[in-house]
Image 1: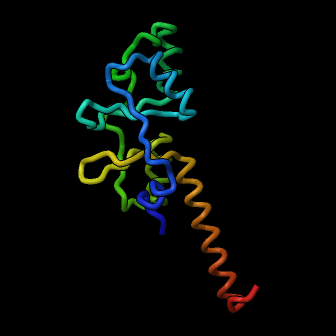
Image 2: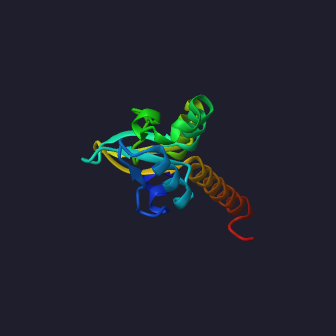
Image 3: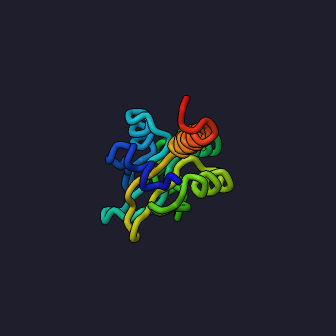
Length: 146
C-alpha cells in the first residue's frame, strides 16, 4: 500500500514556503508563478506555522476587498494544520483531506516538515494502487497470461 513517503518521492524536492510577514500580494505572485494552490507558512527556523491557500485569499477578498492584498500571510493562514507522517497511507490521507475539507496535507517527520501532498497527488496514488490491484487480480485469474 502506497504511503506519503512514496508519494513524496514522485514530487520535486523543492518545498514552496513564505514567511509569516509576507504580504498577500507577494503570496499571490508565488502561487501564480509556481502554479500551485497553497503555500506553507514557515518561521525563520523552518517551523511549520500554517498553510495558506488560494481559497483563503478568495474568502478574504470577499470579506475585506482589496485590503486583503496588504494583509500578512499570518493573518490568513490556517494555523496548526492537520499533518501526516511518511508512513500515512494514501487511504488515510484521502480520509483526512476529505473529512477536513482541505486540499493540501503537510508531511512531517520527527517534527520536521519534509513535504506537502495535494489532493491530486493522493487521487493519482489511489488510481495507481487500484490499477495495480486490477492487474494482479487479472494475472491471478488468467494464470499470469494475457
